[in-house]
Amino acid sequence: MSRDWILSRFGPKTALCVMAAEPEYGPALRSRIRPLITGVGPVEAAAGVAGALAALQAEGAVPDLIVSLGSAGSRTLDHARVYRVTEVSYRDMDASALGFPKGETPFPRLPAVLPLADGPTALPTARLATGGSVVSGAGYDAVDADMVDMETFAVVRAAARFDLPVIGLRGVSDGRSDLTELSHWTNALAEIDLRLAEALDLLHDHFTPVLTEPA
Image (cartoon, rainbow, N blue to C red; front, side, top):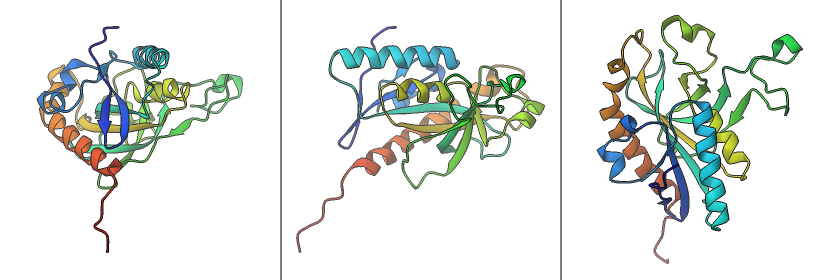
């Protein structure tokens, strides 16, 4: 894992910003953050975040929070709009054959849905489902969430090992039509880059104390 990422600051808070892939990291975000780019999927995300946090812990520099950001798919939410994630599920987890509810991790006994930390109230909110596959077309029928990604649940689990809250910010890149080529995902990333940068500015304001003049 290359160490080209650095911690970001939002008001008085330090944060490790986490993204999956370089195509999501456009010029607007580059002017604001240097994120950990883990690679795509829950395995890469968990390994990358856990490794980064372990390195920071060894240096005595564990951040105050994690910001997981990037693109997502949805067939119902506004295209290219950024949403704050309120909760995340692991859509691939299914131990129902052993008597456990679908989505619940049996050992350890983890609930099917995990909450994320609060963030800027100006952003619309959405429920997210993480999995190791690209969702398209009829695949959304099996998803009990507003949008889908491939990393956030894993980021939340890795952060929990270090008792860190996670704020999730996702821009909708696809989902209204079938994904049949890479450009169906990448076409919206430039606009999402701008909207995510605006969301980070809101996050800075969210954590910055408002100073008032004495009466």
